Length: 165
Image (cartoon, rainbow, N blue to C red; front, side):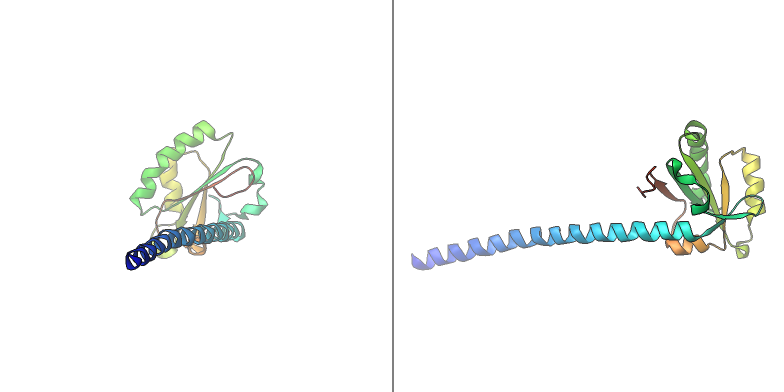
């Protein structure tokens, strides 16, 4: 009988350890994810605000120079040779037409002169499609590299308080 009670106690203790340890690990993991998320938001914001963008006329600017943060911002990185990027643009045009006065849209075409398509190709294509949203360029994909983007389109949303959402 004593052995049976000891085995039961051992099994109960083992069960408690098996149930409680993962819960403690999850709490630590949640804290790690929260810290990672905060660090990742800071890295993205830093990359975006320190990078140069170019407009259709070749003039460059920085995000922190433009006074964009008076309203929420949608930033979409896209590329001419990526069909999935091009397929997303009609929806952005509709959103721009509907919310353009309330939300700032930045459609950033990323390219490298080695791609064979540059800003002139994109400018012509945008005009042919009749898109009216603001288009800017990330020459040589410097911003994409800083953001560690692997797939396009890459879309970011910033709230009015300048917080990445």
